[in-house]
Length: 97
Image 1: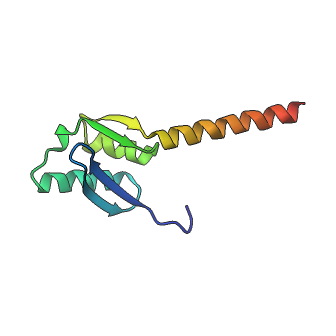
Image 2 (image 1 turned 180 degrees about the vertical axis):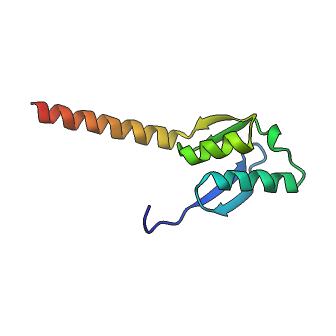
Image 3 (image 1 turned 30 degrees about the vertical axis):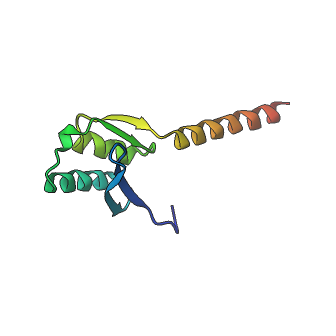
């Protein structure tokens, strides 16, 4: 969004450490992570699970760069979207009365 700067971070939750961070929020950031992982001796095909926000760009990058990874969406974004949908229903119901 206008006036905001985004970063993408990749963490290993089991090892509890940051693996990668970069400026941006598009599919290229996932491709860059996979390239960095490979450069450090990792295998992008070995990544089995990715938890991310509901960005279509991240999903695209994951499909391209981490072909074996299953995607889970983080609960913050799922709950935020559900709350927004509930608010829209409430507003519509208020207008109907």
